[in-house]
Image (cartoon, rainbow, N blue to C red; front, side, top):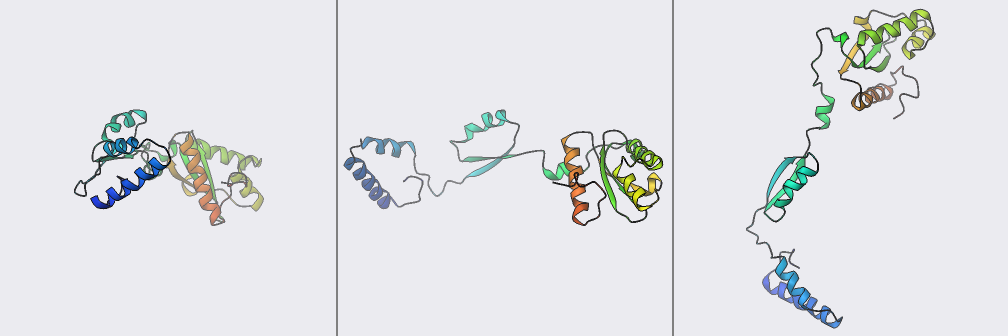
Length: 198
């Protein structure tokens, strides 16, 4: 009753109806009086102000709970936005191949891409793909593609792109899946079928 913008006359009429219902059903009508007193109707002239807090867990809720009884409403934000997670924030080493993160290898013959991740340097990971190609063992999906199709391998500068610089962890796993999915959508990925399932 108090949460609606009613005229005084209509509010009194509604109050009388509720009071009759309570009385006819054997309830104590003093409950209605305590409800009316506990929630004073907010006048139309009161303006609600919003305040934004960076959410850090229970501490933030404890600090902001005092605002509940004021005309200040609280909204929470986070520092870990999707934009921040997907943009490079790490300070790369001068030689980009000495960093770790997400990389893509492009077949020099057909331009199909292999997306991978490494917690070691990109250069070390490239050497492993190169070794698998030279030995003809096909342990690497990229090397296997080159061997099965009779394609040549190129130097690191020509075929390896460093996509995202980061350390091992959930972010790296998520980004790798995203870039594999992106290439799979345009049917341009070399990764095995298990790795491109989202």
